[in-house]
Image 1 (cartoon, rainbow, N blue to C red):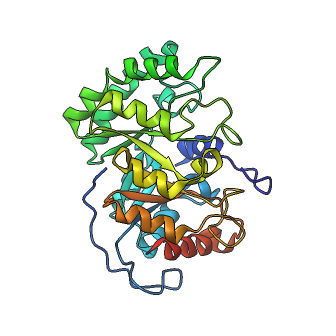
Image 2: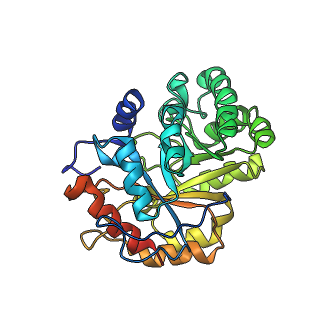
Length: 301
């Protein structure tokens, strides 16, 4: 998290909740208003955007802008916002747990701790069905914090808990995605903070309905070696997030990653899912949409 910005994903999503893989994506002809991209997107990378990064912008406004930019949908939206997405023919590209099942939105109290399994299982069983009935496919989940446990114990606990809901996901055509987050800067003590641990979990669960959400920003902080890691482990990655490093801001010259090369590597794996823009724009022109447009164009390889 940049010191320049006081917004955090955890707090922003709580605010929005109160106020507001392989997918078949529609083809768009994205021509073009003043806030839109200059040319139609190539379509090699399906892109979306995370709502929480855009402060107080209403979901309806963000949906309008996403449509203009040629995005296929919006990430991290719960059931309370799905009607808005459908109104604009957008996809809920990564579904978030509903407000009623608050445990499904907790990054800290996750599957690595057996104390939370009963509540998580109950709410995920319900929410998997909600996601499926709405016509969506991707649903996020979190390992939670270590609280002193080692990798092996956390892995065992995740396997035990997730094994009880994966059959339901398989029956309903929903893919669970556990997000890889950094524990160095943003999410201290988070268990699923490296690719090796996440891939081990995928191998143990051995289901096409469980994948990792590979967050490029977080994994650059934790391990680097992004392109090689993507090439080696891509079959376990069902979704991607972006942001500039350091700072979690624009994908511009003020940060260290060269996103066109990363997008090229993702594309060359045969990936057909979604890359979601998850950076906090420092440039507030049009509510940050100017920066979003630049990022979309940069990643449109």
